[in-house]
Amino acid sequence: MKRRHIEEAFFKALMIFSFSIVVGSLGLILFTVIVKGLPALNLAMITQTPKGGYYLGKEGGILNAIVGSLYLAGGATLLALALGLPVALYLGVYLRRSRWANLVRLSLDVLWGIPSIVYGAFGFTIMLALGMRASLLGGILVLALLELPIMTRAMDEIICMMPHELEQASLAIGATRLETALRVVIRQTLPGIVTAVLLAFGRGIGDAASVLFTAGYTDRLPTSLFRPVASLPLAVFFQLGTPFPEVQQRAYASALVLTIMVLIVSLGSRLIAGRLGRFIIR
Image (tube, rainbow, N blue to C red; front, top):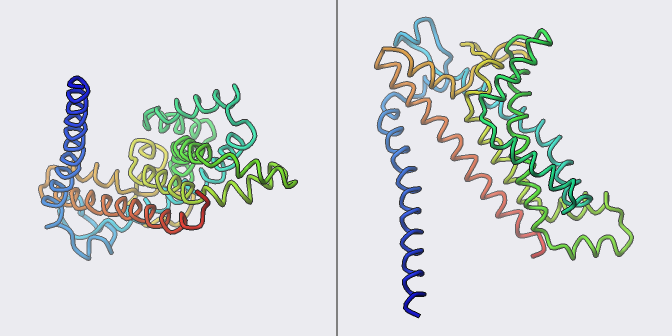
């Protein structure tokens, strides 16, 4: 009995320590970004594009990067959803725990763990072979590849957690597997699917390495799929690389804007999942 108490106390202390590390790291990051970035954040910065000499400390803002990030992450998330949802449904409804399903899941896990710079290098190589230049389209395609394994595996895990009896009941009354997937599985797992989509969106909007060579950078607002587009992570990178303290402070302000956007997405996913969760069978 004494040994059990010691083990329980040890793992409880380990849990509290891990929780403190996670919360402390988040708090330290937020504190740094807020303290250094809030003084430079103003309405002009989020409503204007960079003007001449912006990176030398003159007037302008990061509207081009905000809009560009939304275009990149939004387009990539829609494309990844169009590809990932059918894959997740096929894995969960048709293949389930077969050898092929496990192989696909392993492949997705490996793709999930590949650094984003590798996706950027791969996309850049393909774009050179096709004669494409850095553009919004190139960034969307590479970000979609980056988000695809994240979104698919998250949706697959949610589908696997669904009560199997619901699927069996649907098949027992004469529904096909396709009808079961579309009318039962999606409805039952909709909160999890929404969470997976917003999780992938949050990863896409904050990634810099994959769009560095594929999306390029410009001080203008995006007007075409075939022209370069700015993004907030690269805006932070370029502003921190200047020797001017005013511009470096704007980099922290840009990071604060990006953090707020990701926070809104995270809170939104929880709110939507909570509301949709009231209509599922547990």
